[in-house]
Length: 185
Image (tube, rainbow, N blue to C red; front, side, top):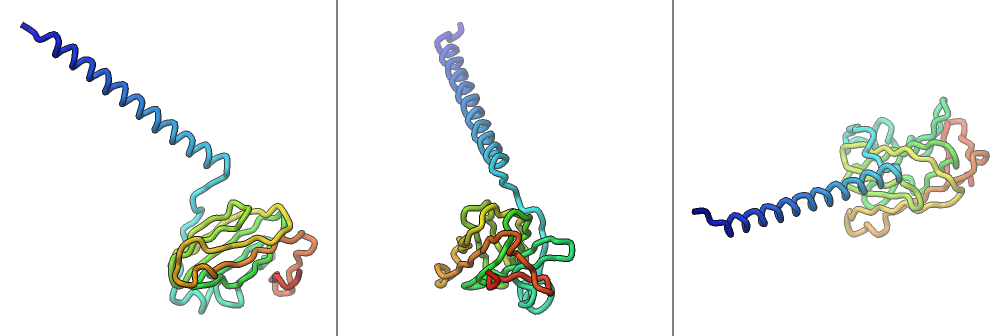
């Protein structure tokens, strides 16, 4: 003798479990699809390079020495801005960049983790001691943009910000040393 009601009940439970498994699978696939679509449509990418630097000596030699900070134009015309994120300021406090040209922003930190974004752009990165954060972007409008630190870094965190001055290409003139400053405005 078989117990038919128990078999029917078991089949119903199996059907319900299968329905839940398919439903959860569809929800996971839909969520992943939204994340991928958003990342592709908004040009959100993971970091393009992993570059290490000694946080104790980054300001003493190499590309993050004080005289190398700020915006420079290389012999090939590439625009690079080098910034140190340190408690509780960005050095330099103002970065001049050209409108309509590719710009490489390079950040380093000697002390703690900082985060930054540049308002009204897709620039948003973390600056971790021991690593160089590099972002490639192009600015489309002449304006002054705020660059605040968005990762709590201590009591002076609320005062940690800088300005990015976007200027027309005809006013973006490097000096003899290839440097451009906000004072040229």
